[in-house]
Amino acid sequence: MSTTAVKTDFAALYAEADAAGKAAAEAAIPVPIVVGEETSPFSGQVDYSKPTYFVSEGLCGFAWVNFKGNTAWGRWAKKTGVASKAYGGGLQVWVRGYGQSVTRKEAYADAFAAVLRDNGVDAYAGSRLD
Image (cartoon, rainbow, N blue to C red; front, side):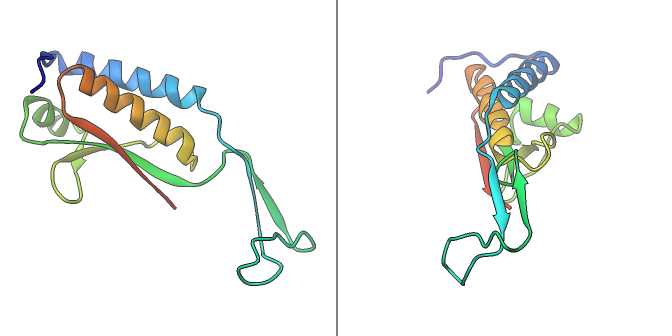
């Protein structure tokens, strides 16, 4: 059982979590990738005689933060439009910025969720590749 008191100024909590997320996303360093056609199926080798694309922001994907909706924080987040219904129950905040960079989106979600947890909200980050 957590002994951390939940902040009741939810606008300030959101601002703090968002600021932490933005700082983490900006500090993240994606690993660039080259996208192209393979020399043969399942070879894992890029055929450089065909068009290739350099993606400086690395892998593409999505990230979000999940938490319970039946809490004061959850009710506030839904009412203000900060959160929406999550697949499988509860609520979620989608990371909308940072283009398609899953590295930056994950960094934002991890930092955002950590601030919520530090303030008594049971929250966790999730992500998937596109």
